[in-house]
Length: 279
Image 1: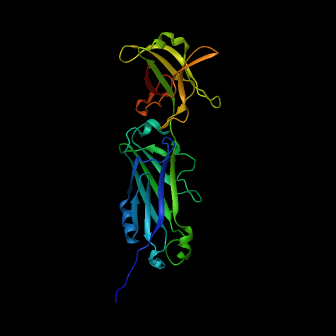
Image 2: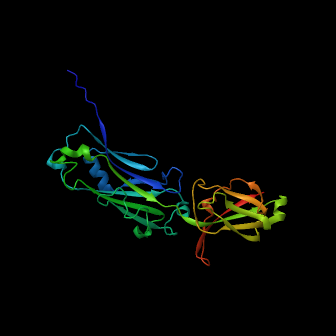
Image 3: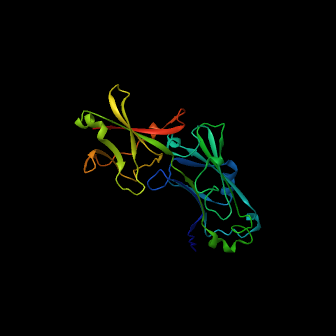
C-alpha cells in the first residue's frame, strides 16, 4: 500500500524592512541572522526560514499537529540585521556615526517594531561592533494562541506581519553649474527651481566659486533641506530668466544628487549633498 503525503506550507511570521529613500520603499540593505537559541528553537518546531530582498519569512508545515503541551508556552525570538550598504547613513535619518545598534521589539497591537511611524534616534545606541546592526526581539505564543493545547484558532491569527520603516535624510542640496556654455556669461540670470507652484522648491545663487579642478562654477543651494530620494519626486530645472515675460529652459530635469557626497558642515550645523552640472 502506498501512502501519499503532501506537505503544505503556511507562513507563520514575516519581518519586512522599508525605506523612504527607495522608489518602491523596499530596503534590501540588510541581511537577517538569528541568534543561536532562536535557530535551535525554530529547528525543534520544524520552522523553515526564507529570505527575500527586504524580508525574512518563517514557514511551518500546515499539516503538523502542534496541539500538544510540549509546544506550549511563550517563544522568545531574536534576529539580527547586518547592514550591507556603506552609504546607508548618508541617506538615512539616523545618527551620523558608525558603530551603532538599533533595538527593535514587538509592540502589542502594532505591526511596526518601533513606537513612532519611522525609525527614530531614540532606539539607537552606541555599539562595540563595527557598522550598523539591528536587534529584533519578539515574543509569540504567550497565551498558547499559536502552539499548544489552545491553538485551534491559529489559522485566524496567521500570518503575523512585522515591519520596520526607515526615513530618508533631509539635507541641503548644492548644484555646481560649470562648462563652456555662453549662458555661464549670464550667471546673474540663471535660476534653479521647480515650476509647480504648489510646495515649490527654490534655490539661492551663491555666485561664482572655485571648483575642485580649479575652474569657476556657479553655486546654487536649496533654500530648505530636501529629502534624498533614489529618483526625483519633483522636477527641478535650470532656467535663464532675464525678465518676467521670458523664460529659457536650459535643463528640463536636474538629477538627484548622489548620496555618496553627503557631508556634515560643523560650522553651519547642516548636512549638504552636491552635484556637478556641465552645460
